[in-house]
Structure formats: C-alpha cells, structure tokens
Image (cartoon, rainbow, N blue to C red; front, side):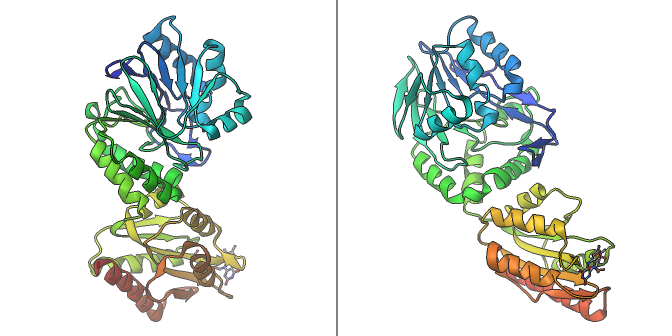
Length: 395
Ligand SMILES: Cc1cc2nc3c(=O)[nH]c(=O)nc-3n(C[C@H](O)[C@H](O)[C@H](O)COP(=O)(O)O)c2cc1C
C-alpha cells in the first residue's frame, strides 16, 4: 500500500464500472473512493469506501495491518460512497471506536443502525494516536450537514472528506507529484460545481476555519492526494466558492431542426468578433449539464436559447436552467433568445427562470424568432452577442 507520509497509508479503491456518479454525473475516467490508514500505537482508519468494493478494501487494510486490530475509525462524511462499509467494518473489527460528531451519529443510526462504540467530537477536539495527533474541524454543509475534516498535526496532513475531491480513478499514482495532473483540473471543477457548488458560503466558512493550518498534504475522499498542488487546489476552492468566474461566455441552446442553433452561431460569432476569446457552445440535448455547470464556474457570461415546445420551453433547457438555479450561482451575466412557430413561450419562460430563480444580471435584448432567420433577427442576435462581449470585457 502506498505510504503517503510517516505511516499514513492510502487504502482506497477505484470504480471504473459506474456510469453515473450519484446516478447523475457521468464518469468518463471513473472515480476513486479514498480511505486512509494511520498505523500508530493506536491504529486509525479515516473514512471507508462504497460497500461494493469491500473485499478489495479489506485486503488493502490487511496488507498494512495483517491481523492487528483497528482502534479508531474517523467518519468525516456519511455519504454512502464513504460510509457504506461501516457496518461490515464493525463485523470485522468489533472493538473499533467510531469517531464522528453529533450529526454523524444521527445518520449512522439511521443508515446502519450503529448506536454504540462511538466517540463524539466537537470542533477543535483532538485525539492522540501515539506519534500522530488528530484534530477535528467541523465543516457543516461542505456538502452535507455532518461533514468534518481531520488534521494530523504531526505530519500536517488534512483529511478533507469530499472537499478538494476530483472525479477520475487513480491509475497507479496516488499523490499528485507522481501523476500528470492535466486532466484533473476540469474534472475537479466539474466535481465541485455539481456536487459542492451550491454551498459557496459553507466552503468559505470552512476555508476560514482552516486558514491557520500549515497543510502539507490534502487527502480527499476522491481523486489524487494533493501535495505539490496544495496551494493551487485551496485557491481553486476559494475562487469557486466565491463564484469568481473568469472572462468567458457559455452559450447553451436547444434545437430540433437547427433554426435556434443558427441564432446561437450568430451570437457566438458576434461575441468573438467583439473580442471574447473563451466561448463554450453546447447543445443541451447532447452535452450533459454537468459539463455546462463546470464551465459556468469558469466563465462569467451565459447566453441560453431554445424553441417553444408544446406551449412551453424545450424540455432539456428547462432541465438545464433548473440545474443552474439549484447551484445559487452568483456574479454572472445572462442573455437569452428563443424560437417559435405559432405562439411564443420560450423567451418569456427563460425570462421567468432568471427573474424567479437564477437572478443573473440580464445583458442585452432577448431575441425572439418566428420560424426562421430574417435580417432583423440576425441583427438582434449580433447585438446580443456584442452586448455580452462589452459587459464581459469591461471588467
Ligand atoms: C413537437 C413540437 C412542438 C412544438 N410546439 C410549439 C408550440 O407550442 N408553440 C410554437 O409556437 N411552436 C411550437 N413548435 C415549433 C418550434 O418551436 C419551431 O419550429 C422552432 O423554430 C423550432 O426550432 P428548431 O428548428 O431549432 O428546432 C413545436 C415544434 C415541435 C416539433
């Protein structure tokens, strides 16, 4: 097993089988469920793995410990991809003391019926393992109520639960310096935007709580162990949780027969000619919304458009707007357009989404098209693209 530092071992597993994480998010590179074992006078396991991988997990633990027992099991996060092996761990290690907070134990009773052998910790509490000393930091709503982090003060290793996590299985390398991490940054942004993105304020609170720590390693429950890139991932979290996106434009459209798509092309061209260099364009029926959310955490401008469908908004656009609204994204601009053939609804529906749920700052005049392009519609699309460009580039 990979030793991260001073008898802190990686004992996690990889999942390259699952198509959709949480049944929602595509996993083109798989995902890892990370768990860590501290082999000290008192042996301590930090989090477990999804129960389907229990056989591999227990082999990993035994590769380090042999037949020796585990004294403590710290539960930083109760989501079942990390807590799923708790009940079986209790069977294999009946004397293990489970460490969590009040909210952890409420969930543990509900999910697994575990109500004893527990040590409840509060923010700032600590426990001695021998050489290692662990401190506990409660970080509620990053991204569940019970989430907490555990800091090994001896080696400056921070076990963060899902925070700083990244989609993608670990293909041999565990620590960032042993991996070509180019693929990680977008997958980390996608993980953050989809899973944690709604909880910007709790993430900011957590970062403030951890600000005084000298962190040498960040051990998340998904993706690489961060060592070389600790400052980078902390800064990424700081930016994303403040919704500080960069200069760029995300254009999303729905289309059945290509007319609405042609509007999107004209808008993109105009924005580009006005100087916007980062423009992402997505057909909402083709690109999974998790990738669109990812780009919304990178770029500040959004323009959406779709046809009218059965007296409402094209369904896939409704889905996307609902996903965006759910993330409470701040500091963004929006423009919109739509099409119809006999009774328009799309444009007014998008306006309503923004007014009632998204609350992005509207930019430019919405464009409405009946059936096909006309010179007037082309001019209005160009004006919308230019207006968004001017807004983005003015900053
Ligand atoms: C199944 C279906 C339902 C539609 N419902 C409406 C409608 O309720 N009101 C309307 O004005 N147009 C409706 N339309 C027409 C489209 O909104 C219109 O043709 C639009 O230009 C299609 O854009 P597209 O070429 O990008 O797919 C409907 C089209 C289809 C195929």
